[in-house]
Image 1 (cartoon, rainbow, N blue to C red):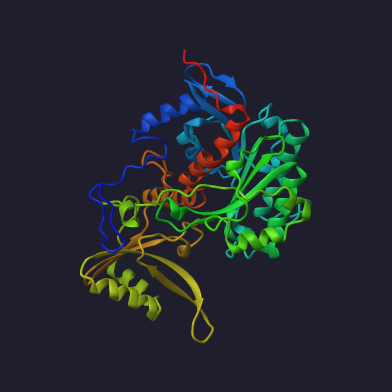
Image 2 (cartoon, rainbow, N blue to C red):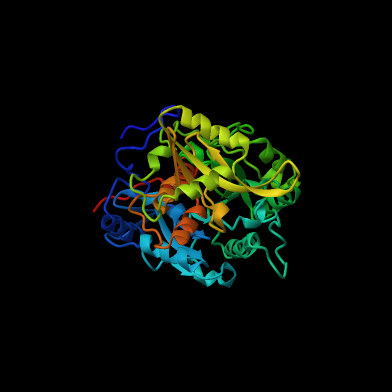
Length: 447
């Protein structure tokens, strides 16, 4: 498949083959491989150091909280074995089970979990993409709240999760590494106090840690900046090659540096500026991920497309006019947002971009949260919603990945997840080298 360039936009002749779960495979093959690797079937697993090995390759262990549809698991890949997962949303749990099999994930509030639910020995990684609503503008920046608050915010579910982590530390089962993922707003919510609170509990639990802002646009045509805390037990050796002398321009923007400056002194002493290699330049464009025949959505009526155009300010209508004047197919994306007009009155606006990158996927709380595609071909302008499969491709999920049947459910699973290749990059460039340094890099002898 030939990808389009930013100046010559066109749809691909065939839907792209995504390999987030491995090479292009049939759905049955994906399920068979997941059951074999992730549920311990097949040959016995031989424990080596802090990682397990299967069929002669190292396999690390992990638990994941707020697991959603298992996108962290997809990104970690075959080198990792899930020992426990949790989410409270039934549609996400059902999606997780459809793709990874039943048995690993427990449906329920994280506050209802106990240490007895978790593995009896230390795992290599605990991953938590805890709720972001109250750390973002959409949630009014209500923040994490306090650990002992009677009524917690949705993002405040971090605290019952951390109670479990603290319990594992106290019972000599501390995860060797912890990764926390959340929205960019966690750097500034409550004037940086939420960021400082997370840093403080990591330091108090005897972890060295750092944070990085990674935009999914490095890997997929979607603007999706996220903050990742990466923590490692102080007892684990950290290779010098993984540590930078100070902030890196690619991963540590001004907002992160300001959040670091506001941390308590003990947390600063435990801080690490992680040296994460930059990925290869992305070549896949937004138009490359579109379905030739979209599934689960229909093209809008001309009247509805005209309605969207009328919601645009002159600036955005001019963008459409320029696209029409080019005489070739141009593909853009639209989000509806509430903006003040010239009199200060809040109005709904449609904002379009033609830069071959999608806006950040969100959960479909309303019409403004669902992304619309605008296709311009000369004087012909058409619009429709982004399809569920296209949303999955923007997260770099395989086309074999099973999505919920209902549109909003499928969009919710994708919009509330973590981008698969970002997880893989962190695993390959940071987590796996770090764990191998501590004895998990040996290979098991094949039978």
